[in-house]
Length: 625
Image (cartoon, rainbow, N blue to C red; front, side, top):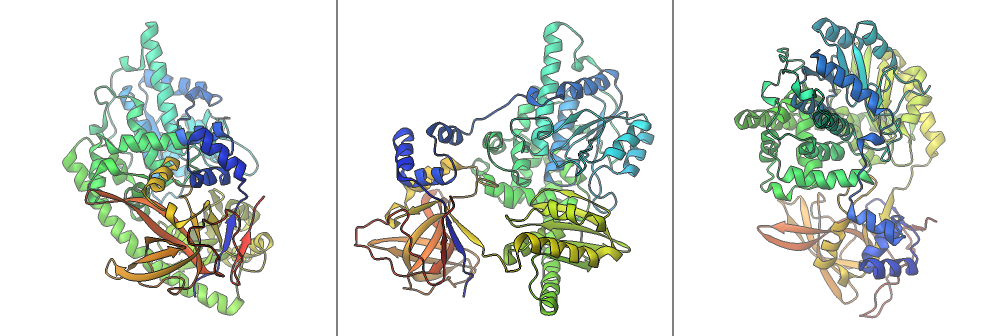
């Protein structure tokens, strides 16, 4: 029997839905979605659908100091190093800033940390190596907001520092003594920008400053001679990544969209605008590396690229090198101007991604076995810490996500190596993972991250104590009983509404992602029939009937099994998509969840009342005020 979930149906006033229908010309279904997502006011709803919010780089408080610091080093011709990170956001933000600085003829190289050797963030050994190699300005992207001591070390070695980041600062509130460009710390109107969006804003500000110089007749950044590029492969020479004719920072909106989706930041406010514009840029990108990446990911028509293809096809391949080896290959892919080399690197990343998937499956099997033993000996816990020898630290975060999806509990997985271990955690909606690490900080060597995802380092001898502390904190927060997984409902619809017109209308809510999930439509008292296997038995097609109406639907990854038997009344949630296949567009219903309910009494032509959902013997209806 499938898991029983709690349907979450937020209140939805008919007057508010009707008001949106009249003011915006939307359907009742889309009106329900907007109201349930807090967009009751027509002007707010109109702005959300337009997805055109933009703010100037000057909205970062103190960005002028960062610009002045960078420009001084560009004009002096001193070496600037951009220090990134090994994930998609860290790679893309490095590429954005390197491209901008090279277009301004700066003497710039980069450093991407090695996940196994360096760990996350700015490392003291890295700072010393960069100082010995001649770096005089270190610009961090996607890291260093917590690197107070490391920034001081850099300054003591004669390196100026500019910090750009988007992660949470230290618990004590102490910040690095350097110019900072950080959306939350600098009062930016969209505090949830990813690191690549922050780098893009800084690039725009530098470009605009150079333009003002030219307009005012002063010496521009572009007047300085191009400096010799570094030969060290660890910091990347990238000689083919220099300024292209007519370069403008807006050319890198494709990278901003890629990173914003991959880093799972909220797709609200300006982030919606950046992704919508960036997906258009990605569809027509001139970057050989991104086009090659789409080729190996089997995206046959770049014009159709969307947030789903970015999240499940492009981002994993770009991430793969940094997870298993070094992230430099991903950065080389983005920066190269050579199509042949781009295809070589993209093919290497595709192979690394296949290897990553194999490694992930092995660790997942080990973790599930360990979890079963833990539950047998200690019962159900509110949160879990699992550890293993030989687990790859670059893959355990993905495995933690899989475990959260399966078991609806927060998980931290730790890859042990000698006397220490590196961990990665993922959480559920109701649990602040970073807060749990704060509470357990005495057991950890270092940690950082977000509410939903975090990383850590730990001494092997503290592993058991940390597991106990983490489970205790989770129990105090979540309670002893396993939480019932919620099933979100955005709109209650009749079967006859589920056609192409509504499928196309719902696309106005895209891009979908964090804080703006795909629309979930509830069909009451439906029955299933006529199931047929598809995709070599991995998926199933079936018919839905509700009242006099009938529709076709699919369920992915279930084999031929459905949550309820044919003919049994069920409340079921679906996503409604526009499916394109061989040049033909049609609506496609994709099953999200279904569970048996009491039969719904209705005449053949009666539509369901929006709030009159009966509570079946196996389900609970929760209305959120």
